Length: 252
Image 1: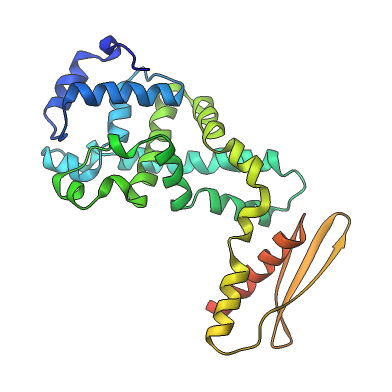
Image 2: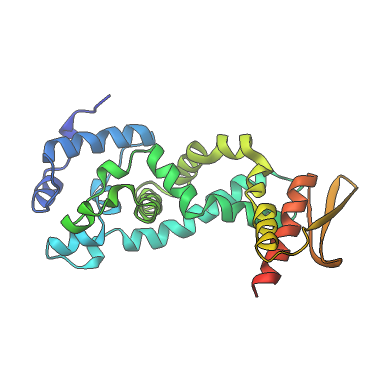
């Protein structure tokens, strides 16, 4: 449901009208209101939200510096997203070691994961792009979507404080983290290691696992030699951790 446009400060509208948006400005503001409804919060300073959606190509075309783009907000938001997801994972997996939590966080803050969340918020349609980036399909590029999402978190923090971003993080990732659990670690070091061995016509990896005090510990052997170790609360996740360590050694 759209929110009445009276929420929009007049000076922000006039500033926006100087930019090339390739759309009706009134439609853009309606879509911006709809985005805030999806976020569950309306910005007090909507210029922060607009900046979070502004690619450097758009600010350059308007004759403004890169400081008018989302880059500084992206810098701030990157740290915030890492913190929010670290807390989500810390609470969700109270029995996992630091190494497992680190790998889980790396998955959720990866560019594809952030871009997926941005698509769920329909950020692509609201990105302010220069003409060249528009022609090159910038609205659906993972790099731009993930950057805009991080910038959005930075803008939300400045506008409403740390807890507001935490609520959005839980809305975007809380259910997925709880539902997918450690399965994300299975994507997919074991397959990558096996394919690497097959491509070199070498013997396949051999995994040996055992459980102790509720924790699975796995070892992977290549050509009979120990090449990686891993531990987790499930055997599959422990094997993935072992395969990941073996891959890292192989690629050094």
